[in-house]
Length: 199
Image: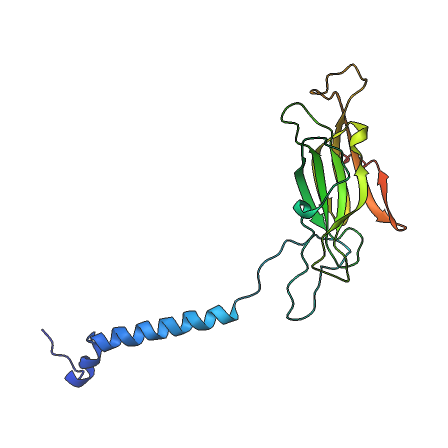
């Protein structure tokens, strides 16, 4: 066996001692603590398109979309309660503040109660004030069910289920159509979305 040409004093530094473990643990803890301060902000879902993302003042919390559970909807449910079936959010009018779309029907317990589709907003001058309904896109009196709802590029699209005649049982809609809404000239304008073209 060939003797080592490295002095024994140098080899002494390769032995593991408890002080080495303490130093390593301290260094790792320092790195973890510093990385906690340097992490990026929380991820938020933002819609793509021409409208800018919702912004808030530096140091302030991001603007929150109105909570549909905090709204009294203009739907007559008699002794039952209104139920929010689904919702979607987005900056629908390009003002930098998110709105909420809410699909609401009476909690009948059975059958297919008609839906209402409402646009909710929070007052700009008081972020703590209760949100309110600013537009009705689908009225429950139309006896329609909203089966799908999306917001993309500030445009709203929905699939609406309805009935061809009063003789059709209210449980089983026999008509389906697409509807779209965009904010234009100070109001939500309804249109029929075009079907995607096939090549």
